Image 1 (cartoon, rainbow, N blue to C red):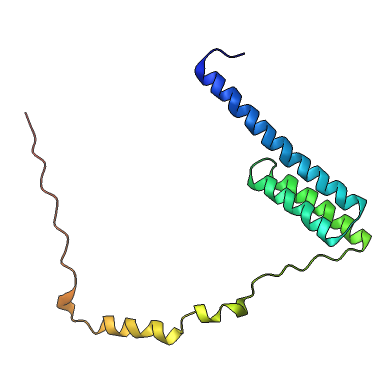
Image 2 (tube, rainbow, N blue to C red):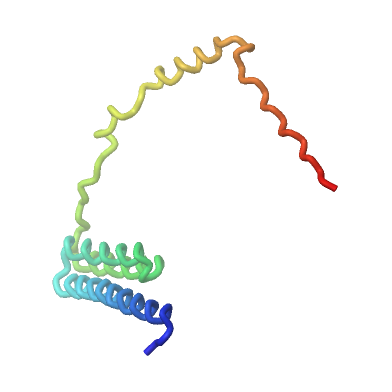
Amino acid sequence: MPIIKSAIKRMKQTIKRRERNVTIKKDIKNAHKAFVASPSAAAASKAQSELDKAVKKGLIKKNTAARRKATIAKTAKVAGVKPATAAKKTAAAKPAAKKPVAAKAAPKKASAAKPAAAKKAPAKKPAAKKTTK
C-alpha cells in the first residue's frame, strides 16, 4: 500500500478508471455476442455504437474499432441483415435558416458608398522605452 499522499490518490484514481474501462469493455463484448447470437439491424447498430463510445472515451484505438465494425458489417451482410436506416435530419428541414444571397450583397454596397475620409485612423506607435544606466 502506498504511504505518500499523491500515491494514495493515484491509486484511488486508477481503481475508478479500471472499473469504468472494464464496464465499457463488457458492454462491447455483450453487444457483439448478442449480435452474433441473432444478427439483426438493431443488434449491429448497438454493437457499432458501443465501439464508437469506447473510441470517444479513449479506451480503444480508432482503427481497432473500424476493424471490428467492418467485421460486424461483413457478418451482417452474410446473414442477410440490411442496415438500419437512421432518421437523420435532412437539409430540406433547414432552408428557413439560410439567408438569401441578395441580403448578403446589400450591406457590401452600402459599405462601399462610405467616403474614404471615414476610414479608421492609423494606430499610434508605442512610446520609446527608457534605458537606465
